[in-house]
Image 1 (cartoon, rainbow over the protein chains, first blue to last red):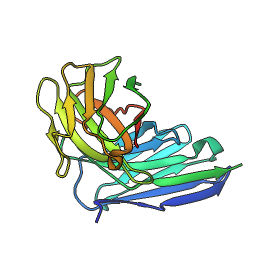
Image 2: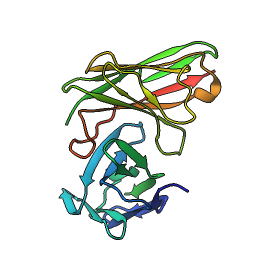
Image 3: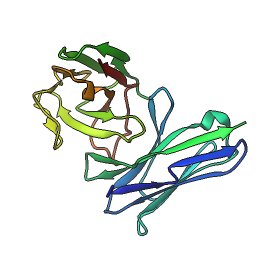
Image 4: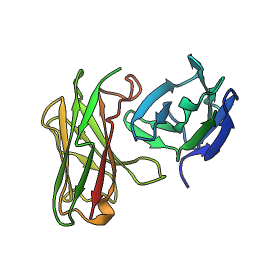
Length: 108
Length: 117
C-alpha cells in the first residue's frame, strides 16, 4: 500500500469550476510538496508546506498535520490547468514519497 | 525558479547498447542529485541519490551496475543505462537539490524519454 494516497485519480471538469484534489499520508512527515506535471513530462513544484495554508494566484494548498491530510484547490479553473497533480511527502531530510497523481482535465 | 536541463530530451536506442543522460543545474550548485524513473501512467520512483564527489546510493531493486550514476561536479550529473533492454524504456527525471528538502525548494529536470527497441 502506497504511503501517500491521492483522490481522485482522474478528474474532468468544465472551465470555471472549483477543483479540489486530496492527499492523505500514513506516516509522519516533515512537509509536503504539490507538483504539477504537464503532458510533455516536465514537473514544476507548486507548493511546499508543513502547516496551514498557502496561496499562489488561483491555487491554494492546505495541510492538516494531525489528520495527515492535504488538499490542493484551483479556483476558476482553466483548460491550461489540465495536467497531472502529484503530492509528495517529505520523510526525514531527503526522501520524497510520491502519490500516484491526479489527472485533471478542464474542458472549455 | 532554478533552471535544470536534461539532455537528450528523448532517445531511441537498440537493445544492448548504452545510453548516457546528462542533467545540469544551470544557476545553482546541486550538492545532491535524485534520479527518478516514471513508467506510463505511474508516479515517479526514486532510483538513486548521489552527493557530489561520492558514490550513489541506490534504492532497493535498482541495479547499480546497470544504472551508472556520476556526480562529478556541483552542476552536472549523468545517468548511464548500460546494456539497455526494452523494459528499461521509461521517462527518466533528475532532481537536483541544494540541501535539505525541508529548507529548499525541489527542482526537476524536464526529463528524458528513453525507448529501447
